[in-house]
Amino acid sequence: MSDLAGFVRDQLGHAPKDLALFERALTHPSVGKDNYQRLEFLGDRVLGLVIAEWLSERFAREMEGQLSHRLTTLVSRSACAEVGIRLGLSDRLKLGKQAMDDGAARSGNVVGDAVEALIAALYLDGGYDAAKAFVRRNWASMVDSQQAAPRHPKSLLLEWAEGHGRRPPDYEVTDQSGPPHAPRFKVRASVRGLGSAEGQGSSKQEAETAAAAALLEQLQ
Image 1 (cartoon, rainbow, N blue to C red):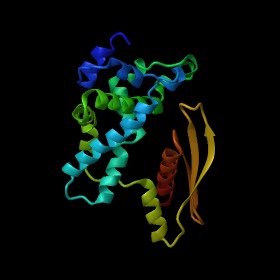
Image 2 (cartoon, one colour):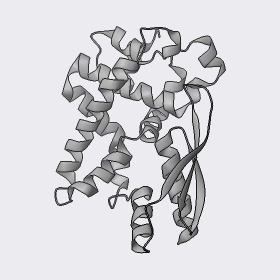
Image 3 (cartoon, rainbow, N blue to C red):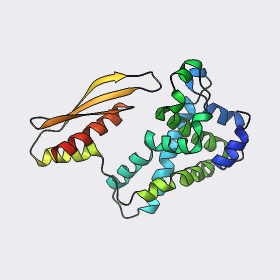
């Protein structure tokens, strides 16, 4: 952590006043009570506000549903993890021995959590504008790549089922494995009488999305 102040200035674009906030944002729960979890909770909400404000400005003619689909994609754990990987957070995380041995530094969940915690640290140390500047700079390429509002696979599968006179899809967790910081879920999506498909992910929601996408590909 000796170069933490330089990292905050160079990579986060902020001159830190309370460096302990940023050290906590990079401290995994396996280390002890003084970790990033509370900061992550706050950072998730700050990120959502910044992105929602940005999308409302940029896509002024879109309906609420379209904006919601964009928002869901941009605040997802995978989006946060992508930013964290670009920032090199895996090499800066402070981990307990067991988490280190389990490879937590390379977990998308852990890296994504740390990004949200850093957003909270920026918000607390520099105010909303500091957090906003960081998010707009690091999410710009993802926002630019959304030429059209993404459609969520679960919504598309529901529409497909209803359009073919079928009942809503069922989702069943068929397996859960892995350590607490890097769980793996396997989910089966099915439309009665037409088929089923499985998907995996680091959360139940992610696995359901992957299963829905797999079943859609199978049915179409």
